Length: 146
Image 1 (tube, one colour):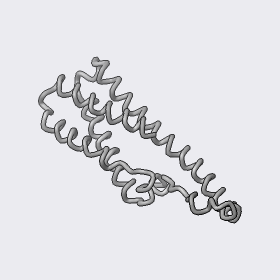
Image 2 (cartoon, one colour):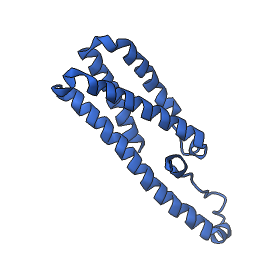
Image 3 (cartoon, rainbow, N blue to C red):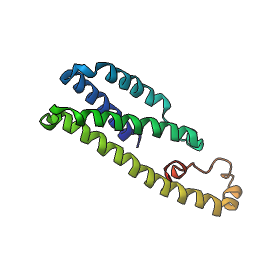
């Protein structure tokens, strides 16, 4: 999941670079996008911070807004129709974004099963002195149920 998120961020950097090369008129807007993009990795949630719904939502909002604005800018350029590099980068971003959402769904399914296992076997885990070392994991469900 993080790998695809990193690939998406890298493709977004590359897309901005390509847009700078092909159209210098958008330099200020692209610099603003670059600044936002650089902030994303520091905003990204961790397994612990996933318990705070606002952290996940803030990251998702920032990513989704930037992806939407950047792709709209790229697709609005006349050169988009013939520039295969721009087209490929836009497609790479969309595919990575989609994979991240698919991974979240799979993660939630696995974690839900894990959490259910912990709940139903808590007494056995306590007997084996494992109850304190195994804790329930947070789900994305809270952030993606909109």
